[in-house]
Image (tube, rainbow, N blue to C red):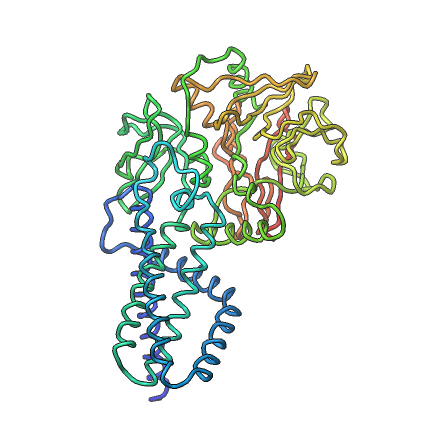
Length: 511
């Protein structure tokens, strides 16, 4: 009985200590995030969000430490070998030199605190540490994270080894260095990985003035939300509103901070083109939908090591944000729908695993999709029969008209624009939106959520079965139908045929 009580007490002490550590780390991570981005919401001293942020930080740190364990073992073995090999009178000087080097690297690593208020920088940083904070520079983000964890682990092991052999000035200074490194670890996590997802609003809150669409939630507390967008003159701005002011406003999509910054950066005033209204009309009739911008991080993935780095970046970023949105591309799937919108058996079309934003062709049997930013036509069996556009900057397809022209979105001059691919292969690119109405329309078109003229709304949300993936849902007249039931797979980028009786979407396994 006494043993059981002692065990329960030890477990309680361990859990309590873990909660306190998680809380403190989460607080530092979120503070570092807000300081780096410049959002600076009104934090409360007690908030459960700190615990969740702290747990995400601890998970990421454990993953990185596990990956670094072979390096740690090698360095430790080399250090022990040097200790045994050096003459007795040289051991102390060498240890002091090593301590000075470790302390210097620790002080240099505090340079992360130089990055502050980056959301309001003009122009946005495109390289270096500040770009990494905004979600770019994948190699630098990973390098800084792995280096900071490696330095902290090696220093902690050294401190444990020295503390067992006796106290002294070296141990005291080393303990201060380790404490400083422990403080910097959650700061690095907050600045580089903590919750790099933003939630794009479908409309401006009534209490908000001075910003135009698109606007996204970039930070929040229990009572307030910090919104980011552009003012009418194109300058970046942040605004804080009470969270209750967002009641009833739909979230169009959850996307990465980097992608959202790409959407709102370098916007220019231009006169609206007449054919852009055709895109908006097509959207209202259900011929087009919404989507996500292709992830710029894929540009880094050149070769094996680049792909490996991008994979680790995706894993750490997803943990830091508790997941993201729908997939960037994958397998082509389809299903027939009954009059109530319920799907029949889902079936995969073809063997391709890298298509994105598919739509059903005007003939009703073929498919149009993007592969590597190029527009391709697929036959009924999912085989590529034609490459319709060689340029690789297409970001989304809406649908095909009866005359063979294809509506979509293309990236030009650093921003999203409506585009028309004519049957002869020429591309007509529309101007950047100039009015608030056009900006709101374009923001709606770039998201996964899609509204149809008959009142139906197709959205992408977390798996209905509680998995890690995403499902496509059709909402109509108060009812919600899960069209995909993907479980742990990522499903999205869905569209309906003009008659609303056929669904096509992209499905990607988690690994």
